[in-house]
Length: 165
Image (cartoon, rainbow, N blue to C red; front, side, top):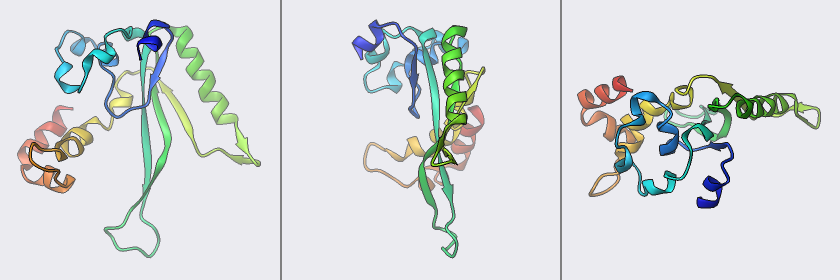
């Protein structure tokens, strides 16, 4: 990670938890102490915020035909929503990649993976409210709990977390 940061090249993170250097691009968060949200926040210290972008990997879920209501198939991500970089030249690289992926075919068929580039820093954070309300609250000091229990054990708290995001 040190060598990557020191290269001073644009980096596109494909993680649910945004890198700390990406969050520093958001003015309201730039001066906040968010280090406690990371196991090792020092990993991100050398990264220049303007050179960091975030890409949200969105898995595809569907109910297989003939299966009960509680059965879903969740596949690998096929839609990736990326935020623009601070530098327009770096964003142009992303837009070229977006266009190349859109134009690609495999055996004459459309490739099912898409990259979409957005000017907003918030688009890759769209699923954060869901992650914070349920997924991230599954890990407790004692033992893991289901997402359902994490959300439903305190609906007022869950609602406030979801609405705050």
